[in-house]
Amino acid sequence: MKLKQISVFLENRKGRLWKALNILSEAKINIRALSIADTSEFGILRMIVPQPEKATKILEDNNFVVKINDVIAVGVLDEPGGLDRILGILNKSDINVEYLYAFVEKRGEQATVVLRTEDIDAGIKALTDGGITILSSEEVYNL
Amino acid sequence: MIWNRKAECMSAEEKEELQLRKLQEVVKRAYENVNYYKKRFNEVNVHPDDVNTLDDLKKLPFTTKADLRDAYPFGMFAVPKEEIVEVHTTSGTTGKPTVSGYTLKDLDIWGEVMARALSMAGAGKKDLIQNCYGYGLFTGGLGVHYGAQKIGATVIPISAGNTQRQIQIMQDFSSTILTCTPSYALYLAEVLQNQGVEPEKISLKAGVFGAEMWTEEMREEIENRFNLSALNVYGLTEIIGPGVAQECAEKSGLHIFDDHFYPEIIDIENLKPLPPGEKGELVLTTLTREGMPIIRFRTRDITTLRPAKCECGRTHVKMDRITGRSDDMLKIRGVIVFPSQIERALLNIKGLEPHYQIIVTRPHHLDELEVQVEASKHLFSDEVKHVEEVKKNLEDHIHDEIGLRVNVTLVEPQSLPRSDGKAVRVIDRRNL
Image (cartoon, rainbow over all chains, first blue to last red; front, top):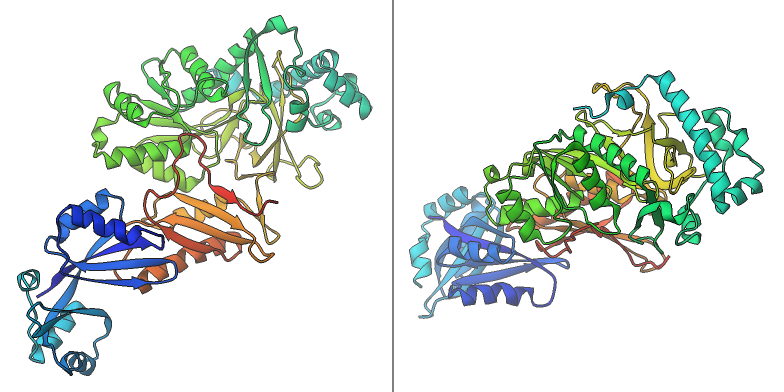
């Protein structure tokens, strides 16, 4: 099960991150998860939102460059070793992780990890074979 | 379509004879009626009688923009003021403006050369020419206007700016020919796209673009976006305005209307004339102008003359598109760089928006060149390493073109300034 992620190009300039988030806020789009990759010159804001197409359109209308791509979401127990198991499986299968970010659910028992492997399909297969449950879009949006 | 077959397809012998006769006349008129020329000729000890062949032109001194400025406002006029029926000035982008005066006959010549130019773009009586060059002291607007009227086409004198109205009129009137700066053409295309105007609603078949430097890649971009034939027009206020040279449908150089404007190419270092085929600064002499004859004007524009026969049948000598200016060329760490080179490199990258800005600084006694490029969906990715690869790729392309390492910065779309006229491509913060 692939999950849609939106990525936004941010110039390293005061107020740009706020501007992007403000646009989503005005449009009443709730961000389920986010991470920022930053370099000295630019940043990439990655987000999981319930309506990725709508969010993309609104951001593009406001002159942001946006890309939608697939990522994998898995649920892990919110306890020591939770993430270790997942990465162990991927490592064993020789699958590269480009980046990942995690967030803890409200109930606090489980954490959700968003993963971007070089090859998404291979990543899903390895994790499924390893007994990990991949979360569907609905599951992530309704957390 | 050839507007004036007799003049445009003249044999070489006939042309040389005509050019020599006109040259002798204009040199004599300039010497006898303009103090500046008399003084300059006397200084180097030449006299109009010394001009016996076209080659003798090289004995005469050059005229520069500074000379014209010194004569501000009317010092270069060769006729009594009452004979002057119109004046124009340069925009003063490189300093104090220079004035250009026209007699009735000069205006007729201007209309004639612009009629030839517009005809090369296929303009006829039935065409609607949307003229977005500025009307006023700038020569662009009225130059195109006179040519269009001579042909009998319908001219829409909309002038520069007011993009929304341009787009409205373009659709409502079904304009067939667009005349403006190439950067404004790209801007119009972008606005049309943003507003979701369907390409079928635009009837443009050709564009006559000039007044700033542009590249072959930019031509392709404009042609693809508008589905028209984009042609290069060249001219300068000091000589007449637009209509000194124009590209024909062959798109392999601009025909100089050399029965009115005599071209030479000089070496920018030693100022000696160069043979055809060699690159240097274009020098122009007006052969027929009455109001303000100009002898050997240094245009500062860098080009090459191509005398070979053109497929279109015209015998007007061709020049390459302007590749730079001898005075706005950048020297970066001692290396000559023309902004057009950087543009060429950038436009070779697929998916790149043709909006960029070059910033020159000297942070630690060494010149640094930063090229800001607007990011697009094509260039962007969710992965840092891909975006950095794109940046490096741009830097490598520029390096291949100019031989210097530059720093490319991706900026957000629409963040670089757009202009209605000449795009500001270079910001030099070195205070040289």
